[in-house]
Image (cartoon, rainbow, N blue to C red):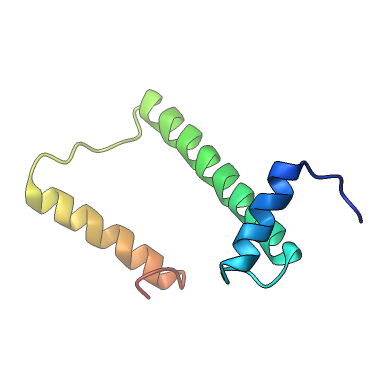
Length: 86
């Protein structure tokens, strides 16, 4: 599907290809679309977090040990889901 692009957008895409970061315009556009998906997911997560706070669903971490335990819990969940630090 041909898309009309501004000269600035075409130049940006070409610069990404010329730098070797991407092999084609399709690769650049796919990466941009993936980032839009990630941005939308992060926005939804932030909105859910704000709602959780408003509704009192949160814990106060008052000590370094509390924070360390919380961090380890998050990393453990991430590992079990096959994410980063797996």
